[in-house]
Image (cartoon, rainbow, N blue to C red; front, side):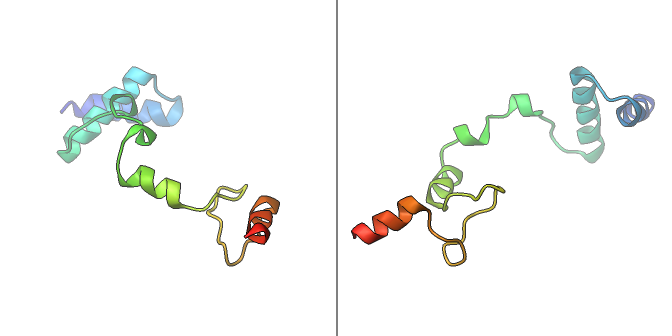
Length: 89
């Protein structure tokens, strides 16, 4: 691994930011240093496009509140639509 280039990229990242190519190069160098495989976000499939437990779990979870937190049915009042559905039962 080119330690001098690694330090150069880290310094530039902290001071000015890196281009996409430089960020990929730094990521590759970091992975190499740690002995791990490297891939960037563009090379991986988006999690929402993958089949399996993640997509099933998301469908089963209650709707999130405006702050992005999961809705707790015991502490969060029902929406008017939910209340109307319950009354209609």
